[in-house]
Amino acid sequence: MDVLGSLADGFVVAFTFQNLLLALLGCFLGTVMGALPGLGPSNGVAILIPLAFSLQLDPTAALILLTSVYYGAMYGGRISSILLNIPGDEPAMMTTLDGYPMTQQGRGGEALAISGIASFVGAFFATWGLVFLAPALVSVALLFGPAEYFALFTLAFATLGGIASRNQAKAALAAAIGLAIGTVGLDPQTGTQRFTFGEVHLFDGIDFLVAIVGLFALSEVFVFLEHRGQEGERKNPPVGRITPAKGMIWRCTPTMLRTSLLGFLAGVLPGAGASLGSFIAYSVEKKLVDREGTFGKGDPRGVAAPEAGNNAAAGGALVPMLALGVPGSGTTAVLLAMLLALNITPGPLLFTNNPDVVWGLIAALFIGNFMLLAMNIPMVGLFVRVLLVPTRYLMPVVAMVSFVGIYGISGSSFDLLVMVGFGVMGWILRKLDVPLVPVILGILLGGEMEKNLRRALTISDGDPTALLASPLSIALWTIAVAGFIAPIVIGRIARRPKRGDTAAEEGADPD
Image 1: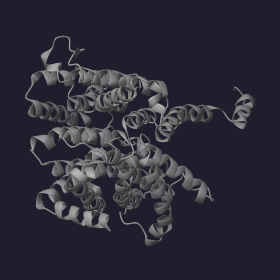
Image 2: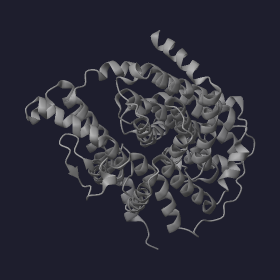
Image 3: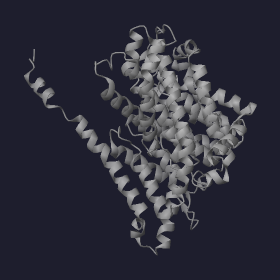
């Protein structure tokens, strides 16, 4: 019952006029950013980090704003997926399979409504899972020493690509780039300069907020500049009625409950994230209930499954971030940077040292969920109009917020140049199809990873076998190796042509 008492204290923290207003603002802005194709939760949170600092919010209020943006963006990603067949982000890709066919049948409003309800169920379930699982995970985390933490950080890097990763080599390259950037500055043990090239501004290392805004927000601007003039005109899609029939909700309820559990378990795994939760939820549900072959043709359960799964995974990804200090997804990696910038260290001691922050945040997630449910269905018409805003008007605003926000935080023109450099690097990495999240994770965790490696080797007098001395570290290394190899094996199996397809191709008439 201590957990419920702490949650009650969290509601006392969250139920202030300022925090409720920030939660409402975050939910609205997050939904808008999630609805706009190409932005998504990671970019949305990264863009608004400078705003949170410029408002001079206390840590709890700043985190409430950004996590509300996170949850709102997960909700919003379904809007363009259903109405335009354009996923707002990767987790929303599975929603297009049945959401867009429903729009073509004149049931776009019903698809949006059922997806909003499914998103609420998944996020609500995941937040309760966060309430009970995160404190329990803290007691396990107290067993971690330097060697175990080093193995845990390695596990985060190894599994970052997830099951859906297309190229683990590129993910490893991105992680190496991030770790290399993380070494810039003064050596924490000897004070020796590393890769500073005599530049005084680099003595303290690369500011991860500058790196995040450059890699995510500014690179999006450069991508737009590259493809300017290629944006087609978007027509107002038909929505129809926005209230689903009771029978549809009743039919989708078992689907929502099952896929919420699957999505939450996928989200808790470091590096898996909402994309895996959405994919597993849709695939499993299709095998369980699609006896008539209606999935992919406008079945409401095909909308409810991925939406409940990806929103539950989004909540589940907060569990390892808060309890272990290891982000469970790309967006939680950005939130981790925000925590560190606020001088709050996530991990086992977070629930002891900053209970008002963590429980206020969890309480705000509950409040934000109800806000999103109440906001999304009546305001469907407004969000449809947001989809019609041309990118040429949107991207200058993104650039302005990035430059003004970063300069407001640091007051250094050198940081603006560094941000532009990261924007160019992010643009190049995107062209090469190299993921950006491992770069950020390397910058964030590189310092702690190095410290724990040094501590483990110092304690063992330089014996590297100390990294495998405990059953816990062996288990973590095993999972890390399996998590890195599994996507490679699964990818090869998925790309292998079936015998029937091959025979059909060989027997086809060339004419």
